[in-house]
Length: 78
Image 1 (spheres, rainbow, N blue to C red):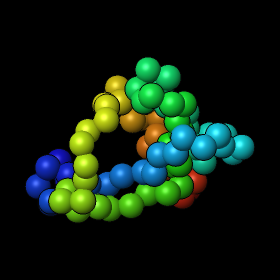
Image 2: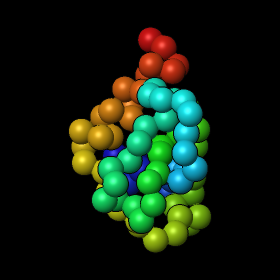
Image 3: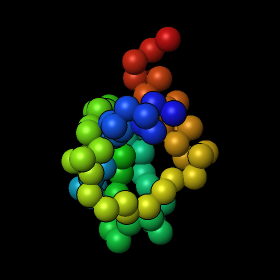
Image 4: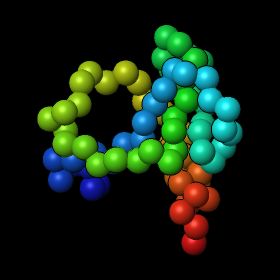
């Protein structure tokens, strides 16, 4: 809901560089989502203007998004 009305999105960085850190700091994306193996850097969360966004590359299933939120909560604590 926040993203739909504010003109901004809450985003986490994605990289194709292999990561040494595991979950909850990084989360591997499904192989079929992007052309190269990629990871979400859960600790690198930003709010971005929708004007700055490029084309949509894919969509994560809700269960994967829930896992990313779980990782973020592990990092920031209760």
